[in-house]
Image (cartoon, rainbow, N blue to C red; front, side, top):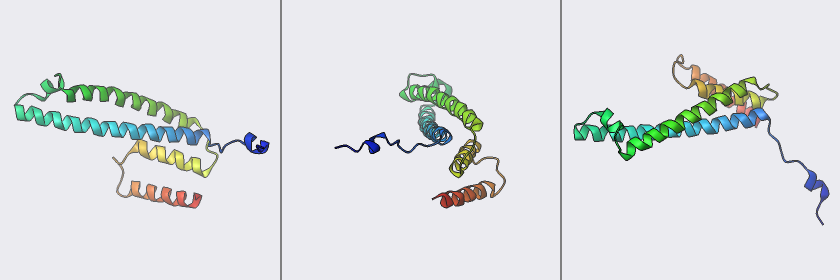
Length: 138
């Protein structure tokens, strides 16, 4: 006989902010991966252009597989960029109700900022503080 109390029990639910933040991080990671893939193809194409003594622009506009793949990646990168921008606006509008949500907002903010234009040690200090906060949540 099946336990009726167990069957009506709700699974653990995460907050909307945590779910949206997790989705943002996943899409951001995909976008970074596609940018890296695009850069590898660019290097291959530039090397081929140099070896053949032709202009890079000619290679970019050619029927070469690398050029086609780069154009497709451009489209995907742009779409992922728009999705992450929309989600970031959504995350900003959501209220914070737990320490886990604080961490989620900080993580997304740091990833949006990136590691450029920071003063020396600023990023490391923020990340160190964030890691300490994470440990306290465990």
